[in-house]
Amino acid sequence: MIDFGDKVKIEMKRHGVPNEFFVHKVIGRIKSNSFVNVPIQSPATEVLHSGEIVSVLTVVQEGIHERNVFAVRESDVSLSNGSWNNPHTSQPTKPRNTEGASNAKQ
Image (cartoon, rainbow, N blue to C red; front, side, top):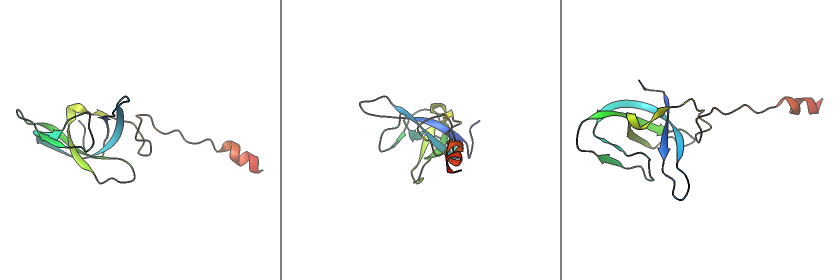
């Protein structure tokens, strides 16, 4: 079960190019029939869906400005092993090779 603090990938709508998946941080979990449809378009707008109440995650996109909080259906996201500083991929950022730089100074 996805819960507070987990990182998830959510598909974001791109016009004219393939959609991208961005890493978001889960900050809450509720049951609701109001959530943003995926792929998310800009601006992310919550829609009231008629029918049954579903499991919804409140998320914030990771990055410099983490202030836009919105709700997405849990079934529309997947767990991510991505790094906070690499939001466009599910792969962690590789550390830079600094070994050569330190050898050059000697």
